[in-house]
Image (cartoon, rainbow, N blue to C red; front, side, top):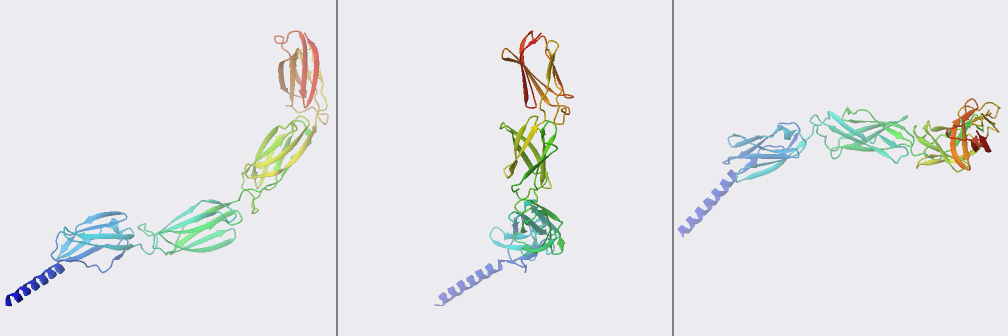
Length: 401
């Protein structure tokens, strides 16, 4: 019986010694805080009785490293490298040797006051009307380029024309942002932001007019005669969008002109203060035009009609020197004045029903002169056709020698 009691006592003493040895071999973190500010000097200290060859592995989203300790009386001190302590976030650590491992993490928070405001705004131009928007993004950062903590209050100042507005936002997931919707009127919105006494620079957003609505067109001319010389000017009403904003300068407007023959002419202009102007020469023959203006793919005008009266009632054609020299003129306009230089005069020469040559010349001082080359035109009978200002004259079977 005594032997049995002695054996139980020995087993109990061995168990107690084993537990005591395990407790004495524990790794214990001595630091009282696990939250630090960026830039702080962080030294992790561990109590490790009877444990040797400890290393510290630490890592965050910016990198990782292995740190060797300074050991004094079973206290292991590990200095965290600066490149890991200057970035906010979670820093994970692990102390280990070949037999044991203890892990944990630290929270590194940014500094309280920002040194810089990273501010982004885009797009820089939006459409008036209240449906389009630009976005302002603000990132207040400390002197180590760390965004401030979530919930940091940011003031956004907004001015448009004579109105001013102050908007409050809070940072979340590193940034603060605000959608700035367009006003009804066109103009320029000025924006700035402020976080903890730090102000951003000024930003502006151009509020552009919306797409143009349909419009009207008009015309101006010095007279209504088709002299091929004077200019007719087409112009639009003030072109506006649905919100009564004048469209942007430089809006391109095409004027399409359909004549009596169904042919289409085109002239173009760009808007200045909402009005587009375009010019075109008068026709050189009696004509009626149908005119319509279009902003391609966006809007159009009504259609207007204008007529041009005949400026030239008649002209003379004379032949000389064996009918090889032909003089057209004088050609006189609606006030009995000589037609301006540049009127197109066409001479067509036929022989036995076949077109030999077509000669086009501009008028000069009210006349046009032609001379038939003997190398081309042998002595024979020819038919001559002279056409200008919509008037055509024919001279049949005229002998040339």
